[in-house]
Length: 289
Image 1 (cartoon, rainbow, N blue to C red):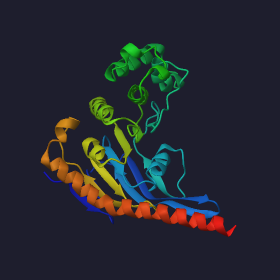
Image 2: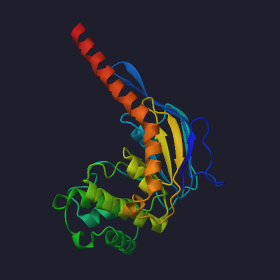
Image 3: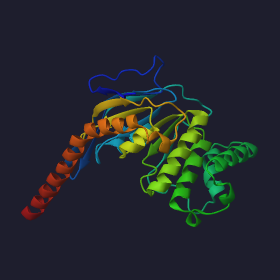
């Protein structure tokens, strides 16, 4: 069982359905210390409804910038983003961030209820939906606890429960497990897949981990070093539902991870060299003052 790898130049459709998310010629430039920095350059991609889409790339390649554009938190300098099938009854997206993003003054239940409460949903609906996702994330017995009483993994479970309870069209996840130890990370990856299987919502997931990308994703986009461009698309052939640990025992899993790492290696090296060059240039500017 081999992965399908497509290099840049075209964005082949994985199905004949209309993409849930269409990104066309998106570029993003920032001004930093009177210098223009290009974070993203002419990114094109199509994400199908119900697809678990993962983006990997070296540090500083614009992954989070792209996610923020999809969330409506940033505007592209050039290009367009389209979301199809949006509903007036639910939000376009919910976002799960890298670090703690739950409110420290709210209980677990109140945090998980937050999106539904903002939307003025009936109290009985909020209670039923939140109870369901607290149960799914193993948080029922901690419903009245506060974030400072929870471990890092449990706080991320609250973020996941809140995102799913809000019932968005699209889930956006920015390295949600990056701060966790390997044991908690693997457990939460399995829990995320188990909960996602219920709804098959469209997911855009950012990670630095190739293992995580292959374990979770249906399709993976590999990005270049800054300015971030699409280097390749990889279709992951493994069936669902999946168990993360069982999947990682399969020989073809290792082959796909190796293929993606081969795509990434030169980009990571280029990113590291660019960081060193920028540091040297900054020191020279200070010396001239």
